[in-house]
Image 1 (cartoon, rainbow, N blue to C red):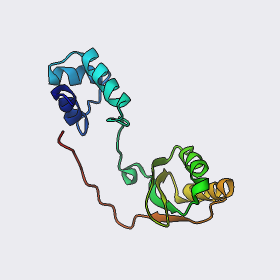
Image 2 (cartoon, rainbow, N blue to C red):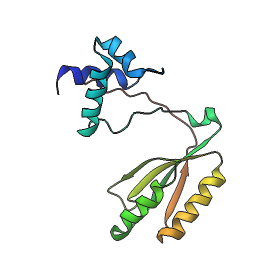
Image 3 (cartoon, rainbow, N blue to C red):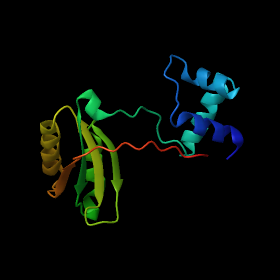
Image 4 (tube, rainbow, N blue to C red):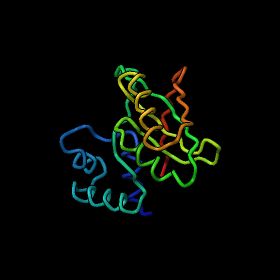
Length: 148
């Protein structure tokens, strides 16, 4: 990875500009043109280095509820289960784990009742009945930047 990519990755992790022209602003900070930054970010996304660019919000400060869910999903149902779960806009992460509860995902909604209803619908649509709802009792926010 060349130095241009490294500089862009280091900049956008926690200091992505909130403006009408964020890539121009990044370019100004990095002494690059707006189009050069856009092209580099596109290439990094195509290569799978960047998965997404988006905000991270403290759900509680927005009066939302967040919970971690874990499901015990048979191998033959994983694709359908993951597709069903990912259809919900409140699902922010969904990943496989080497554990008897092998699919874990986070779910955000306005109220816990919305999440509970969605989990019941997911159970019905997928036939996966073992889904744990594990709401946080205490929130710890850790800022993590990876020096590239």
